[in-house]
Length: 136
Image (cartoon, rainbow, N blue to C red):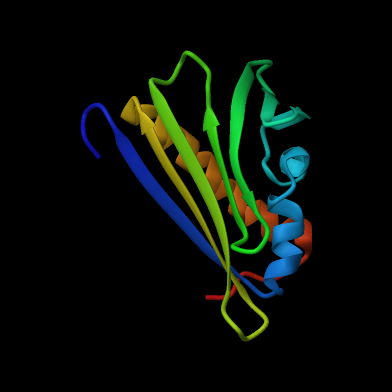
């Protein structure tokens, strides 16, 4: 992290197969189901616009939806950010569990901290929504 740019990563291991996790996180329109504070979103082509609980619309560009790699990447295109890239990877650990990695890189750095904090809470909520345990 620098004064201008921040990078954060949060991980969680879930007691369920990766295809189950991917079915939720790999579908852009399902974000409000597992990310508290996002009331709704619309997806048109490679553009997703989320509406936060506070009423703030946040436009995003979907960059990658790769079901083989189980990777979802997007950029927030709001003028609040100079640059942003978030990546969600769902890894198969080969034992019926999944390792989910949510990475955020943004400028200004403070927004990376804010987004990453939301991502950490969203990953925990993802386990609840899927009805699975978090594996230590």
